Length: 202
Image 1 (cartoon, rainbow, N blue to C red):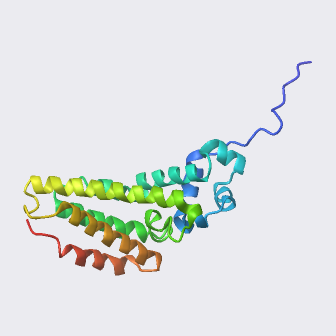
Image 2 (image 1 turned 45 degrees about the vertical axis):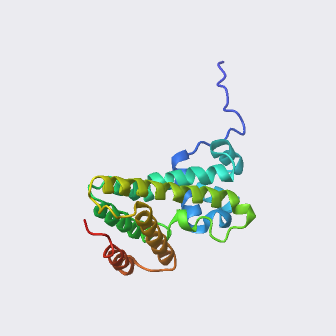
Image 3 (image 1 turned 180 degrees about the vertical axis):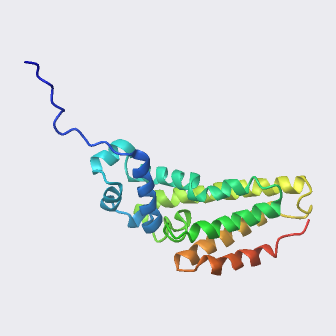
């Protein structure tokens, strides 16, 4: 009689890593780095801590991967905005994307990149440093795009690419904080429109 081998006892259940990461991103987005406990994360992901460590590493590693997913997903408006043909259109798309992303009804309010490390103490230093670098990278990309606009005469010669980039980032971050506090898209889009009225003419 042929004996069929049994499956190994205690074999870990398979799971969809992409879906699990998406759920982890949502937890970090809603609760921030420090507010998201390992239990919160594994419960949302539907896996054990052992499986989480095996698939994603520790909490810092998971946060970094979640931020990458956020950048490529909900926050991808920033990269798309840089491809707009004019500096004004870059600024318009960047702020419109900020308003849209931070007020999505199917996602946590605000921005993971802004709220992710707010009120974090020493235990949240990794998240603070990671998000500072994330925001600095966005600032650098905007500055380089506006420098190109100056070089191409799409912005006036006296325009300051650094100032314009920081201006946009400041407005976008403020929009995110307002959204986290309950402000709606209809309330925040006029703020973005008002900010663009100060944009330098060509």
